[in-house]
Length: 437
Image (cartoon, rainbow, N blue to C red):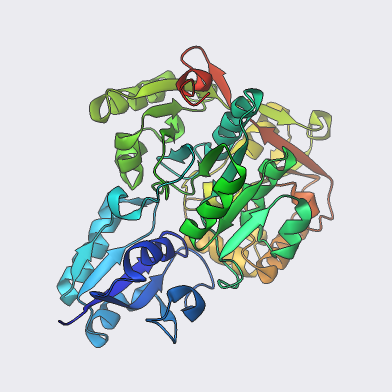
């Protein structure tokens, strides 16, 4: 019987997970290639033979997504599997139309095929968009579990931007582990806040192998989702976070809408800085597609290290990279804090952007003066430093989850902005975790 020739479209995360679970040991299918997008420096590599298994002694090549139609024809692809997240529904169907026109089938894999069963309870925290507040919600869940003598381990959605073989299963319990694993800024932003609270974090490439290690030291596994992807593990409690600053997006993005429809618990976050009209829109959309979900309202209060350092100063605001790039928010907590504490001027980083940072502004045209904290590699970190140095700001205000000063050499004074989840009223997360507690 002829094997189905498969191409997986991805961005170094969900694509590898789908391959590992559905295709790695599948005698009826052969994955001929991956395509990559969203993340720089991914294409041109290979998914290594050590991870791909005995059927793939040469590994699997990773090509740029712009070559998709040509690859379908030249590699005689039968089936294309779309495997990345936080994109508009129309974007997914545009890719589907391209695939169908080139002669292949187009496929999306769902929960039954791609969620791994754990031996311990699992709480998943996902979202309808990037930047809704997943990680702060995960930290709140962890605190509640700890108060009830439950050991929890966080498993973070993949960000394997380095040597994939070395990153198969990664365990982080200290800041030194971040250095050992040569983590990017994006990885540090997700891991460091958990490590600061004494929480062990797992991540990597092979998420079934990761789960088997994590559940050895946990009463409860916490899935900390990335972008708006579906959880990789079947959860006992599925919590999904929404953002009324982007009201309506909960029904317009893939697979965020699927998350919303699956959720047992929906958090409407940032109600302290959103309009009542937008909050009501989100409430109505939840009621329309998932009327049985428990709704929790929450705020994201801002804490600033030294407000006096901001007052009357020209401020360069540095925001969490993924949130303001493919999360499509022009600014975040850094700009809000600078305005609240009386800056004299918001410095526009765009005229001073260098190298890969300039490329980022050209790609994400919705961006305003705020500077995204991009750091997918050493060169991009150097470009970020040069961009900061070139501005005439008096002070840098940064709202990245990681302490920016530990990674980037700053020639200007810096003020850190933090934000945490604050539940408003009842029900709250403690109520929805009662059965696990």
